[in-house]
Image 1 (cartoon, rainbow, N blue to C red):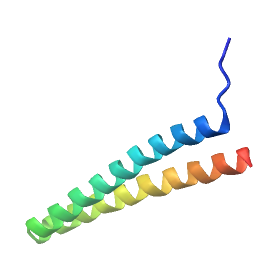
Image 2 (image 1 turned 135 degrees about the vertical axis):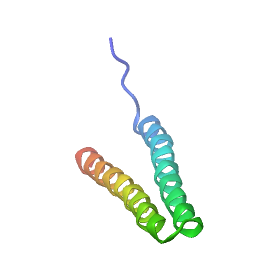
Image 3 (image 1 turned 30 degrees about the horizontal axis):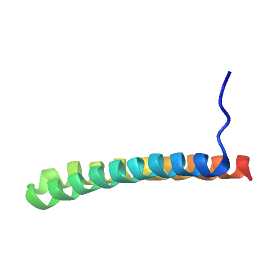
Length: 73
């Protein structure tokens, strides 16, 4: 038998997951910025690609959160 979660418990779990994805996206973007600042001109594009990848992670997670919120609502 599966245990049903209350709305408060679901919200707490979602906050924990949200926090991890935000840190992951921020870390990827920060690494890209570090590569851009410390690298040569050819490394700037590599750093920019890391920053874009971090932004994509954040956007994908935002879309998942909005979709989940609309289903619950």
